[in-house]
Length: 94
Image 1: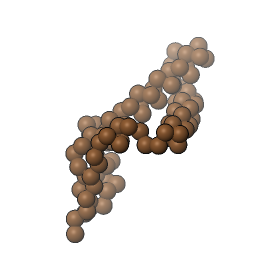
Image 2: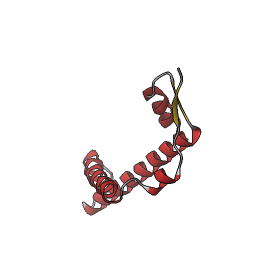
Image 3: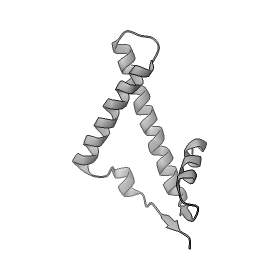
Image 4: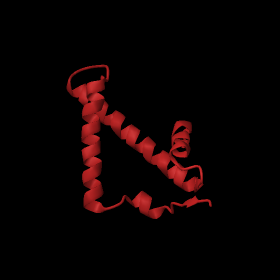
């Protein structure tokens, strides 16, 4: 698991919340998948403009494409299979 992702998860949950290890791993895996897809799209925008260096504009363009693509897939097919197949558990302590 990515340490920064783990820290973000723990920082955003209430102090009384607990999250299952599999849920943390799933969130981390989804973050890695998203970042790899974003990097690939950014590189494609960079290559299309015959540039050798990925610039912030390439990343922003890729983010727009990636986000709109992911949202249309989400609305068209419902939740991704990887989320359906995993059991996510977040419990709150009293």
